[in-house]
Amino acid sequence: MKLVGYVRVSTESQEENTSLESQRERIEAYCKAFGHELSQVFTEVGSGKNTVDRPHFQQAMEALNNGADGIVALKLDRIARNCRDVLTLVEDVLQPKNKALVLLDLNVDTSTPTGKMILTMMAAVAELERAQINERTQGGRKAKAQKGGYAYGSPAFGFESVEGELTPKQDEQEVIALIRRHRKSGKSFGAIANYLNAQSIPTKRGGQWAAAQVQRVIER
Image (cartoon, rainbow, N blue to C red; front, side, top):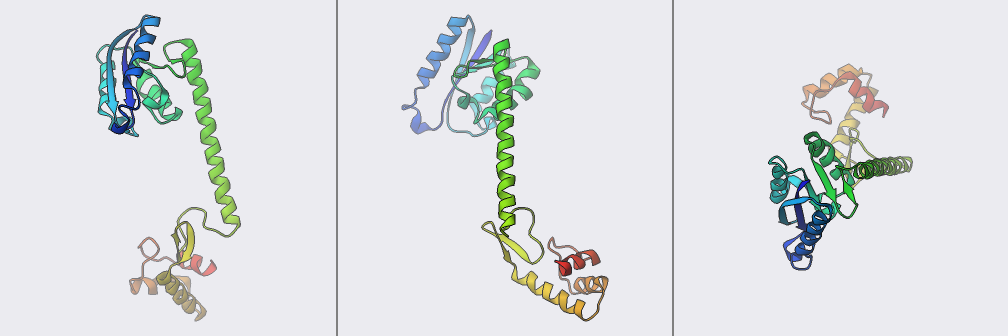
């Protein structure tokens, strides 16, 4: 295969401490050992959480459109932050163009059956990570809600979220008190809604009141 190399350090302060040359040498040694042609090596100094923020990575990707068969890097984190980001790159960008990704630290070469198998395992691990994160998030929200805390979603009329805690919102609490007084006087939900709209008192989202919204405030 004809490959382009990509080496990166996270910040300029690390340029001398983290050997770009060592990354290059290991990539060159790999290509020589397996008979691949290394056409270019692109060097990046900078964090760039997203690959779109890395100009030299984009140049490496452009080289794939000009005859290269794949891109090779020493480690997964030189390409992206985690397995999920690498899988997105492979599945959405490289595979549709029949291009390969080679990661020396994981022994991944997506042009080979073994590399594809490892990539499949990475996908399974990434899916498990997503499920575990979602489970922990939902579990934390439920536990907080059971304790009477603010878990998630938009706060109800009369309340706001302050540093993750649900607290009364004074101006809306005054409107709630007004609604309750009108309801105790015998007015219908619709009549109260009309009164609020006539007084230019907005709903939580700044819109017009309806009878159902007034009813929810009363019943809450």
